[in-house]
Amino acid sequence: MTASAQQQARRQQRIEELCAASLRAITGQAGLHYRGQRLYRGETRLPTHAPHLRIDPAEDDFVGCRGAADGMALRLLHSDAQRHRQLCPVDPVERLVFELLEQLRVETHAPRDMPGLADNLRHRFESWSRAFYRSGLTEGSIGILLYTVAQMCWSRLHSRQVLEETEDYIEATRASLAGELGTALAGLRRHRHDQAAYSEHALAIARIVGERVRAERANAPDDDESAGEEKESTAAFVLLLDFEESNEDEEGVTTAPTGHSKAFEESALLYRVFTTRFDREVHAGSLVRRALLRENRERLDQATTEQAINLPRLARRLGSVLWEPRNDGWDFGQEEGRIDGRRLAQLVSSPTERRLFYREQVKLGTDCAVTLLIDCSGSMKHHILPVTMMAESLIRALEMIGASTELLGFTTGAWNGGRAYQAWMSQGRPRHPGRVSEACHLIFKDANRSWRRARNEIAALLKPDLFREGIDGEAVDWACERLLTRPETRRILLVISDGSPSDSATNLVNDAYYLDNHLKEVVARRSRGGQVEILGLGVGLDLSPFYRRCLATDMNEALDTRLFDEIVELIGGRHRR
Picture 1 (cartoon, helix red, strand yellow):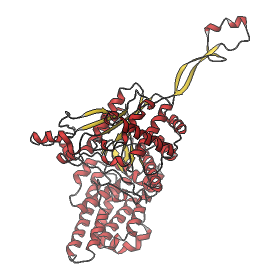
Picture 2 (cartoon, rainbow, N blue to C red):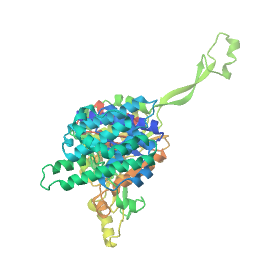
Picture 3 (cartoon, rainbow, N blue to C red):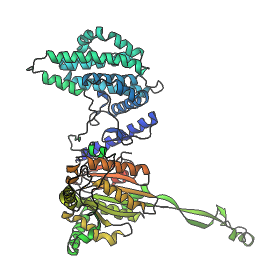
Picture 4 (spheres, rainbow, N blue to C red):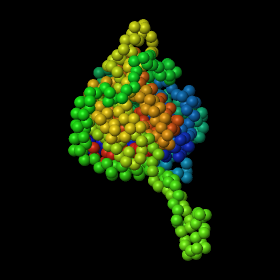
């Protein structure tokens, strides 16, 4: 990930934070937040109801992004979702028009005492209109039809002129539609405060547009060169309500792909493990020969020295977000505060003595436990040297400010399921068995050992054959359970990964997103408990589909001050809250 890509990712995160805060303030719904450019309420992803609400942070300005968020807020406040679903047409084009008209209706409910919100909505719709027109998608008959209907309905509902840039271009189509849509358009304006009455006119417009589109397609010859353009015009309006593909911009910032798991849903969202007989929890240092550990330690020390990481500065930065005032006893002999009864006799012997008081002594300290959980799947071994240096630097800096630390990892005991998969095969391959592989949880440093005592075991991270496959959900659960045994009041889990959960055997016998859905369930459940803060640190990957607070990094570059500052901001709660 290049510097410009990281800058764009930070900008996107900041915009999403601000838009989510605005959404929560307007709706009063505390669970609204963005993950991976998608709006969620709790762990439920909310659909984008209209094409002009879909934004591209790389292209759209902040006002446009705010306009889209404000539109979603008004939809949540002023639209009965259940009634709307019941009335929604089946035909894709008719459904598209009906969805758009309902969104335009709720946008007329912008509060009069919030003129900025109305300006944001207008800016968003006009920006989308210009972009669609300039893309050339209005050159086909279906494209110009759908675009003109959108302009006419928006103009009538908001009592504004259509977009001036395209007014002349759509005039002929507008005139041809005026007779058919006139009555329904008037009904939209008249009943915009009554969803049931409004929907009758919206459905009428949707049917008229649907009939026109079907007629256009029926009359178009099969060899018409414009057929592809017509399809493209229609596709540009598609709502993409179930869009689940990974997103990647031109700079290479990739969002982790994920989707719905039918197997997970059919099991009533209960994660299953076929057998735990072959699972193990092991100290990683015991898996590596001592000579190889010393060799890896020397390699790690040399690489760390070359990076010249400023640990005292990093410790101060971590302290600024983790330190809290703590009572450190009493400070006697003060000139003000509480009277010290033991010194009252001094008033007789020395009437001028004023140091007769004591005060509570407060010092900054940290009552925090931090666990770093490293994904030891096969792809991570290509980044493991800088990841290990980064993790070790964080551990050393955290210890300098008094925080307890733990370094854990997770992998599988064998490729392709190993003995667990063979056991499933031998028992007749029962349907939906859940996880059918050997889970292996690694301890590189536990919380009761200092970095100095565990430094050799940490070097076990550089052993390539530890890296196999990854079962993230169980590992996060395991790390949280370990954190909950700690006496500290604040507990932080930082998961370092370069991809989605992946175990070939489990995916084969369930489906591709079984482990993804379990990870989401674990993170949601643990986050709701409020006892552990779970953060995601993506190695060249945006982990926002899984973690609300996350940061994407590039381990191909030097471990510089900027990277550690971003990690400190993440720990302090300034990324994807």
